[in-house]
Length: 120
Image 1 (cartoon, rainbow, N blue to C red):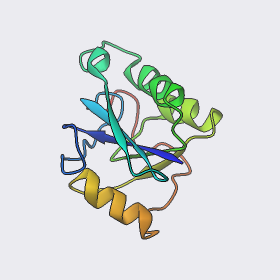
Image 2 (tube, one colour):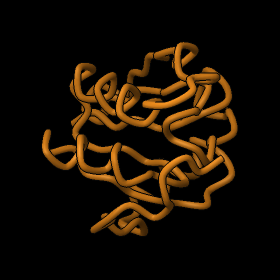
Image 3 (cartoon, one colour):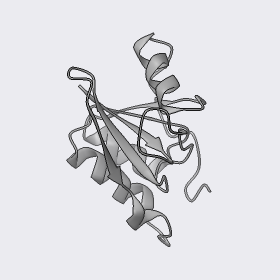
Image 4 (spheres, rainbow, N blue to C red):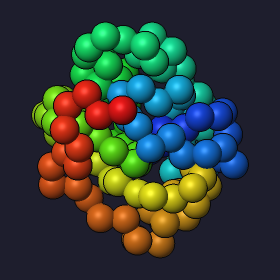
């Protein structure tokens, strides 16, 4: 399975970005192979609206089975849920720590969005 982490950087040691729709980058990590790739979210950093939906579509197209982030709004959550992408919210400081928590079973799948629309 492939996991997507919101991040400000481009590797496992980078900070986890607490925002989903306006995260700088997404790190796509393949649990089976241990490989990762960075997907830029530049187009949504300053979007007036629709950043969460567009970011969710990017994640779905990348083939992710789950998203690990700090916060996910209702519109993005609906898009992800409809595509079968699980969402996990965490306060982990780095992507590596979030991955370790996921592997240890310390993250709980979100049942709904955890912020309102246009959270900044």
